Image (cartoon, rainbow, N blue to C red; front, side, top):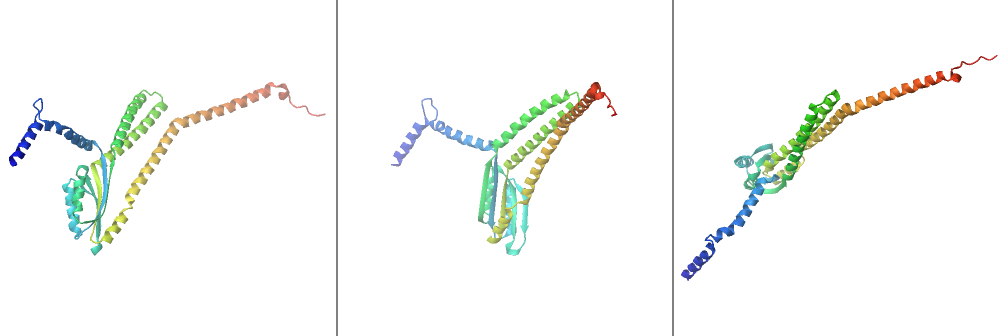
Length: 286
């Protein structure tokens, strides 16, 4: 029986290993699968994905767990972005925000889970490849517009044309800077995931710390500042256009109105002088 089995294996190997051209059939059959795996890997390398998450751990030794977490993240090539720790005996908790390279995200999260008992975990992944490509296209288009406006501004002769060209250049360059900052921010977020880990010895203390961290005043400040900056930029742009374009037009219109009133008044005076009935002085009675 062993010999028969060996013969079957040998025969099978000979059938699979050869074809009409003398090539190996196994290698040919494996190529599609290998190509598919390589394609998936290439897609993952090209895709820009933002990883975020939270992890709550119950640990026996808070300081040792925090140190071990720092070592795990550093080994993965990451760093600590923010940290907060409250010392209250057994109720002490530490909330550490790690920035972890995207290609080491899963490995680092798995290692951090091993530092204690997992009380809660939430991870999210958002692909931003399309957003980055769209921002890059818009930036390229704006740079083309910037070059065109620059060429027109260099040929400006009058003071008004120069001011208008500078205003348009400032507006376009401001848009480029804003979009470029958004693109850089997305690139950074995609390169480094953000994971907030809360360590604690008591479950209640850990849960309370997670609930308190849910409200992020720093994030609210950033969003409010961004909104205010956008409003101020819009108002500044409107003021520039009003001062350079609309104000001179309004001044010209106002001058034309005054000139028209003066002309009408002068025409009325001349009409009164040329009309004998109007020009004749009144006759005294008696």
